[in-house]
Length: 378
Image (cartoon, rainbow, N blue to C red):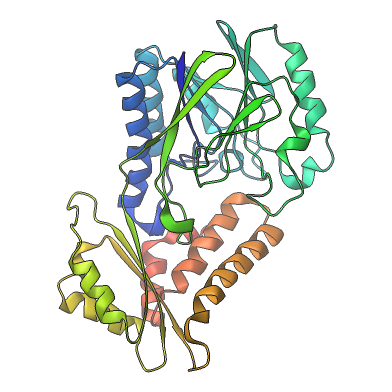
C-alpha cells in the first residue's frame, strides 16, 4: 500500500499581494494531484489548512473542486481535517470544505473512515486556549474505541506541538499507543519522520512558502509513504518544483559581490524568483539605492518581487543586526498570536506589517493600499 501525505496547501493565499503567488499555491497542489495519479497511490491524506481563508473566493473554490474531482475520477480518495485557517475564529457558516465533500473529499473532524484494512482518524484544529480545558489523549482513545479493529490505524492532527511552537503541548504526552501512523500539519517546515511510542510521526510541511522569514527557504514538498506491513513504514520526501526564494545578506563592503553572485544565476523565465536582501549600512545607502543598483545591472526585471531589509548600524555593531532582525520578527509574531485570536485578521495585519517594512515613502504605501484593498477590509 502507498499513499501521499501533504499539508498546509493554503489555497487562495495571495502572498506578497501578487496574483502570481496565489497561482503558485494552486499549482503546487495540482503537482501533487498529478503525481498521485501517475504513481497510482491508494489514497491521500491532507493534515489541515487546505484553504488559506475560511471564506475562500469562488475562483479558489472552483479550482479546489477541479483538483478533488480529478482525484475522484481516478479513484483516489482524499481525506482531510480542518486546520486553523480553514475555519477561522467566529465562523458560524458551513466550511468551504463541506462543499468539496460533494466532489470526493472526505472531511474527518473527530471522526474516522475505514478503508479496507485501515482506519483513518482525524481531529480538527483546536485553539491552544481551549486545549487546556480538554483531555486530548482521552478524546483520541475514545475515538479509537469507536472504530472497528483494524491492523493499521492512522491519525491526522493540526496542533501547536513543541518544540516547533512555543507551547507546553508535547505530542508524546497526548498520543495513545494505538496509532501506527500520525500525520501532523500546522508547522510549515518538513521534518524527517520519527517514532513516538508505537507511532511513526510525519510532518510534511507546507507545499509553498508563506512568510518572508521561513527558515533557510528549504525545499517544499510532500511525503510518499510505502507500507509493506505494520512494522515496515517507509517515508520518502518528494520535492515540488516551486518558485525559488533567494536570500542574500550584505553590508557596505559586500553589496557589489552579492550582486555579482546574482548575475551568475540562471533564471527561470516561467517562474521568476523572489529576492530577499538583508543588509547593514554605516553610511547613506538606502533601499532605493539597492534596487537602483540591481536595475542598472539588468537584474531587477529577473525577479518577481524584491524585498530589501536594510539596517543602519554604528561601527560597534557590525553584523549583530542579523540577530536583531530575527528577534524582532519573533517578537512581532508573538504579539500577533497573543492579541489577535481571529486567524484571518491576524494574517491581514501580518501581511501589512511586513509590507510596510519595505516601503521608502508614504506614496509607496498609498499604492500598496490601492492595490491590496482586500487586506484592509475586516
